[in-house]
Structure formats: structure tokens, C-alpha cells
Length: 510
Image 1 (cartoon, rainbow, N blue to C red):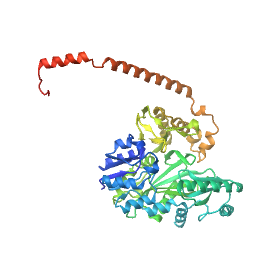
Image 2: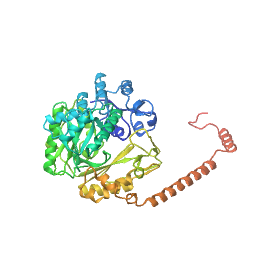
Image 3: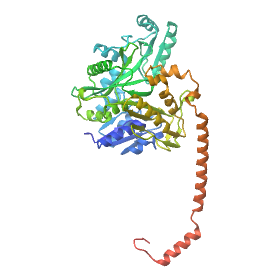
Image 4: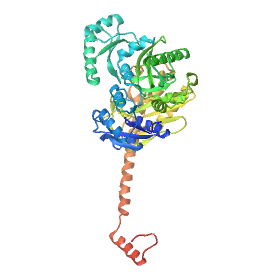
């Protein structure tokens, strides 16, 4: 077993990994930028080292600095979490070259699956159904137009190295091709330093379903069933759940077998996720493979009872998976809401600042993966997600009702969050019925006034004003109390004279 692991990340996922390491009796090393000096993940780890200025390019994305800290701290392994360097093939290879265990798949697998065209080709050859599209790279508008004639409109124009909702455009007509080509190519070059593009047929009103897999170095591969992640905004997920309500049992079993088939084809080791689109006829198509831990891994952990982070660590240390597929079952239903420091009333703009008050919900069936604390600063430099709230129930309805209750208890003062927006989703009839697709937020959120999402806005503002007055009153009273208790020069002199007269006491030093 490994003895010391460096966590090359920040926020709630760094805290989550540290907890798993503690349960395995492994020491942790945190790294932090100047903006994160007082962050929770720094306070929680056994050791912590600075790695540079606030911008991620000079800190969390600096391979040289992170490797340098790993050597200095004598860390035997590095866990990349998700985001930052988690799917960077060069980083995985550098770890191997330096004799440091990379907790994740090999650099070759990361490179193959990070290239969306290569991934499509590998999966197609393995018998995994893929979305109809181009079989190779498209280098010009003319090539895009020719492919569009074969695939048909509408289609998605995508960056080969894309991810995180960047580097893709929906093209519904031929006249949109030139502008879409220029926009995606430019965004791909600036965001991923890779301008290559390809085309996929656009599937109308799809469900977005993914399969969690685990694989060891000895050829054993299992899947941990499915997650629904169709509730998304600008291709970024907002709410996830497991099991996926859009799957019947027959489709669930088949997509699981297909996921194992694709995982074996690429020679994968560790925890990973295969993403699929499910059309209205229940046909599914491979979308991409994430070669890392997913943000929503907690809902899978809750319904199958397996700690994915511990499994990652044990596999990376050379262990084998102790489970067979027949051992894996889903129990109950779990839902995860991402808590973002953002302003839904202002086009979901990030809302950095100081958390003046924080009250986390409690009770049966709740899990909080939180990366902040009362008094912490939410910096502007990174992703605005500050926490994840997970609820579990015997069935989907109980999990939803429990999440509604938990969100009502969740209080964050000093910054704005998307808590009320999550509540709106959970109360929407379409969500409750399970009748939704990836366009749910786009279709429903535009139709309503913000007062429907925030029906008690005036009450909230009044409550905030009262709380501010209360804090000011407490501060004033505190100052008066402090002044009344300030030491008096004459009173202290009298105490010293009395002590001298009484002489030395036992255990005192003069």
C-alpha cells in the first residue's frame, strides 16, 4: 500500500480524496496557490506546499512545480482529482518517468480517449455504437460541408480535444457552417491548443447517460451501473442521479456490457466513465470516455456501496478488484446537486467573495462534499463549484423529497449561489415525472419569470437586512464589552503589589 499521496487539485475534491486516504492510513500532501493559502483542503491535509500565483496556469497546471513538490515531500503517488491535469497525458507520462505512481490510466490511454476522433475509431472497431459522423479530422469548411451532406442537418461541430462544454456548436443549416467553423476552430485553438475539428450527427432531445467502470491491472473489468446527467446548462452538468430514470432494465444491462467491451478494447486501468446519448427510441450511442474520477461519482458510491477513490488508490498500488459483476447491485436512488457560487439571476455569472455564514443540512440519507467553511474566500480564478450535496432514498421520489428538504436547510451568506435554482428543478413536473432531455433547462427556464424561481425574494432581502443589523449590533456590543474589560494600569499595579506581599506560590515561577 502507498504511504504518502500528493493531491494535485483543490476544493471539495481534494478534501474528498484526503478523507479516503485517511481511511486507508495514508498521509496526504496538499498543494495550493496564493489564492488558496487558507483553503479547507490545505488545512485538512497532513502536509501542504505552495505552488505559485493564483492563475491556474502558474500553479495547478504547472507540471514542473507539482512534480517538484512531490519529490520534496517524498510523495509516492499523485492523485489528480478531476479538472486541471487529470486528463493530461503529458503529466501522467512525467509521473511515470519520475518514478511516481499516477493514480489513473496510462498516458497512452489518456491520449487516445482525449482525442475524440481516435476514441470514436477505437470504440467503433470494438463494436460499440457511435454517433454517426466524420471518421477523421476535418480541416476546412468544404470538408465540413461534404460531411454534412452525408450525415445530414442538424449536426454538432466539435473540437477533437474539446471538453467542459467548450469547442462545440450546433449547426442547423448550411448557411451556419462558415461562422460555426471559424468560431469552433478559434475556441479549440485558444482553449486546447488544438484546432482540429470533427462532425457528429445531432440527436434531437437525447438523454445523457453514463456508465461507471472499474478495471485493474490483471484484466478484471466491472461496471457500477448508470448515472443520469441530462440536467445540464451550456453542456455543463447541474444535477445527476443514479439509477438513470430514462433506462429500462434491458437497456441498462446491455449498455453495461457494451461499456465493459469498450473498456477492454482500450486496455483501461482504474476508474473511468463511458458517456452515451440515448435517443427517443432508446437507442444509445457512445459519446466519449472520461479517463478520470467524475464530479458525480458520489451518487454511484451511494447506490452500489463502493468507495471509488479507495478503489482507484488500491488499483494504482497494484491491487486487484475484489468484486465480480454479479456482486454489484443498485440499492435505492441517489441524487446530487452541485452548489455553485454564481448568480442565476445574472446569467449564472460567478460570484466570488467571502462566505460570511454557512449552515449545512443534516439528517438521514445526506452527504455533503464541501470544499469551503464559514469565513473562507471563494476566489475568482477557478471553477465556482464550492460543494456537492447528495441525498439517498429507498426510491427516486424519496431521494427528491429529501433533497428538497436539505436544500431548504442549506444556508450560505455573503455570496450568491444556485441553491434556489436547484430547488426549482426538483419541483418541476417534468423533472418529477422523469420526462426530460438535455434541453430541459433551455426549454423550461426561458419560459418562466425569475419570480417563479425565487418566489420569496423580498422576504430573503428583508431577512438579509435584519441579519446585517443583528451582526452590526453584536459587533457594537462586543466593542463595548471589550472596552469595559480592558486592563486598568492602576488596577493591575494593585494586583502585582498584592502578589509580591503574598510571596511565591507553589508551581509559580518568579
